[in-house]
Length: 118
Image 1 (cartoon, helix red, strand yellow):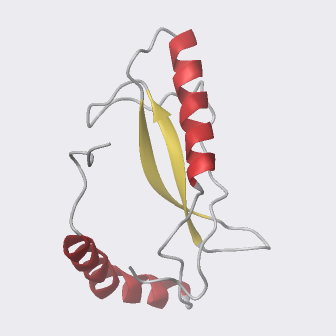
Image 2: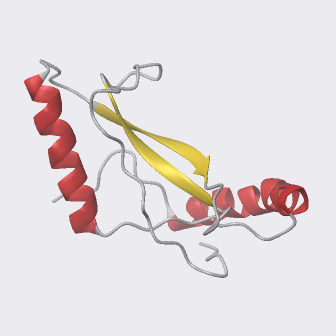
């Protein structure tokens, strides 16, 4: 299998992640009073299962090319106030494709603690 077109180099990934830490992590820590999560992990099988679910439900709705938008989110309950991400199905793959609220999004990732830098 060939490398997907949107892959980036490890060096670029490190630079992007370091930029996030330098420009946002301290602001988030100051506003919340504690270090927050900055990495989220799903197994390949979890992602494959979710993508198959999105494809199947989208096809039932007549959507042939769905997308998945990743939204930053945060818990606000007795268990956690940390960041998370929501994987939300969309009705297409353009930048402004609407979220498909008829398909449930995915959450419940795991995160390293303390956060893992790339």
